[in-house]
Image (tube, helix red, strand yellow):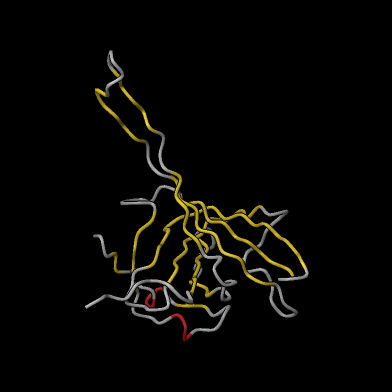
Length: 171
């Protein structure tokens, strides 16, 4: 029997790590097919010997970016405070797939940037990119689930830490 996979409509929550007492906040639903975790493979170091064969190979750590686009509308304010696309605070971020039993990517600490755009097909778009930073322990991106179904929350809702207990499926 096949197992569910993590596609479809996702929900994203963020937490300001530089603000005392900050809670998780639910972001607006992203524009379709814009939520993507991208990986830049770590640099490859090669130790070759005569004849061009490898004696050893070593890689540096991968780099991770999570990006998504949110449409502007008449009532929606930016979920992050920025100055010309620069967001000063560091944030944790979690993406919950449509099926909440399927793990989604979590960054315990990230730097966020913004690109604003407008066209007559989509209107105003806010594209946010989270660059993962080294976590206190483990991987920069952890694959997790939470019991809370984020689809039951409204955009902008504050969510208590007790409702966001992560289960790391690879731990």
